[in-house]
Amino acid sequence: MTSKLLLHVFILISVVPVLDAAFCHGSPKKTAQPNLIPIDTGVPRFIRSVPNGKLYEVGSGEDAFKIIHVYGTSYEMGYAQGQLIPNDTQRMVNAVWEYMEDQIAFHRSNTIVMSILRYSLDAALDLEELITKRFTNPKFFEEIRGISDAAHVDAKKLIRIHLIGELTKGSCSMLGAWGKAVPVADSLLQLRALDWAVDGPFKDFPQVTVYHPVNSTYGQDFANFGWTGWIGSITGMNSKQMAISEIGVSFPDETFGKESRIGVPFTNLLRDILQYDRTLDDAINRISNSKRTCDLILGVGDGKLPAFRSIEYSASVANFYDDMNMQPSAEWHPRIDNVVYYGMDWDCPSFNSVLAKQIQTYYGNITAEVVIRNIVSIVQTGNMQVAVYDLTQNIAYLSNAKATYESTGGKYAYERQYVKLDMGRLFSEKAPQLQP
Ligand SMILES: *[C@@H]1O[C@H](CO)[C@@H](O)[C@H](O)[C@H]1NC(C)=O
Ligand SMILES: *[C@@H]1O[C@H](CO)[C@@H](O)[C@H](O)[C@H]1NC(C)=O
Ligand SMILES: *[C@@H]1O[C@H](CO)[C@@H](O)[C@H](O)[C@H]1NC(C)=O
Image 1 (cartoon, helix red, strand yellow):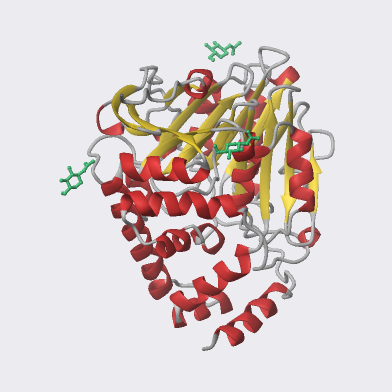
Image 2 (tube, rainbow, N blue to C red):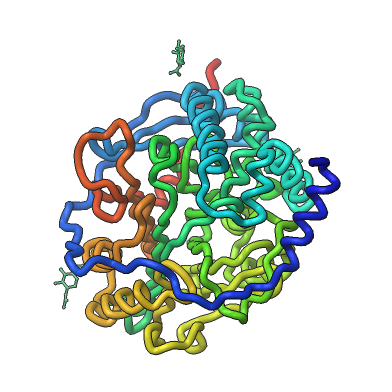
């Protein structure tokens, strides 16, 4: 198939309206248990440094994960990451690429997208890259080039693995809670629970990357909670007390309108919010004015106000919700004062009703500990990764799915040990001393 033909098919897909209004599948098990594992409060352990980067590890035993600090321009920050962990970067990129090929070969769904991808993953991804390039900040490609030069990985392959977000969006959960919902009235708590391919390679490469750009041209200090070598964002917090949440929507209603393949990949948009936006209004403007692609629910919190908004997101719409106008409005998704929440999907009574019940049970006493112990564990959401952000105290709690090299503990992030991250300290980490 030629690129031109592929382009036509992609454009065709972009105008296919949403036809079905079904409900999501599955539900939390009635036997779900609270997560009583104590939170790991150990400080990061220094491993090594390079001219523009420092590598730390945090967490205990097999549950430890990397914290990487990078400094400078986009290229320099990418180069530092590649230089600090070249081997893991190579392994990760190859593993994700293989995983994507397997997905295409064995994917059960028979959508048009999947049949094109099955025909030629290479061609489809090149095309997607071509289409999205003009909607992507050139600094993204500079950072890719830095990683590629230092870790000796193919830049093109590195770019392609970043398109997995648009290809296989997860079903996830989120919440924002403030005011009467929380014990400290002016505080803001936010949840990002990621339910995504735990059979894939990502779980073996958990990493928090803390960016310290040289000046505001390259953005502000922010932390990307993700995986080695993967520089898009789906989870993270910035030094302006802001954080992101995201849910892939597979069961929208008619209010979503159309999806599109052509536009800014959402993982780049979320990263730009962390890197460049200083206020909730900045993020709202960015989302409103972007060329959006697929159906999502986003969440953005700003601890300075404090305020949280969920966003009904598609090529057609960007609708912003707080606790007063939260949608969908249904018996299984009741409005709760000072809380905005979504369980797994848009039209998803089974998860939303359990999430609502847990929020109501702990109303007034919703803390990070309660979210970890009694909310996500009972809703059974966040199989791959869970982040709880205390945007007032500048603390984050992070848990990751069991890696293939791990022998102990539950399989899913929501049933494993969380690590406490003092984000204020991470953002003020000093650049490595230059060697004389
Ligand atoms: C990467 O792998 C090479 C070859 O196996 C090894 O010599 C080197 O020490 C490894 N580098 C790091 C940073 O682990
Ligand atoms: C930011 O840093 C870059 C690279 O060092 C430099 O070229 C640029 O002039 C700086 N911009 C500002 C506004 O300081
Ligand atoms: C509130 O939550 C904390 C844990 O964060 C717990 O120790 C305390 O007993 C709870 N208080 C009430 C009234 O539920």
